[in-house]
Length: 84
Image: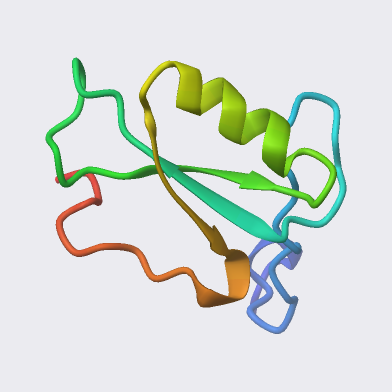
């Protein structure tokens, strides 16, 4: 018998924006990499709603971390970017 916590028929929650305090639906994937910590092919991701895409992009961009901004429904995790 399945417990309520392991119900495989329950859909996963919709991805939400990574901006502090925002619970809006994510529309964008901001792929980034901190070159002092990560290998060049590694991509970490933040999700953004329409309202916060520019702010989060600028935050990562001024630090030289932002690598790509892609619509969530078009995002494909690059090979080799996952943690080992």
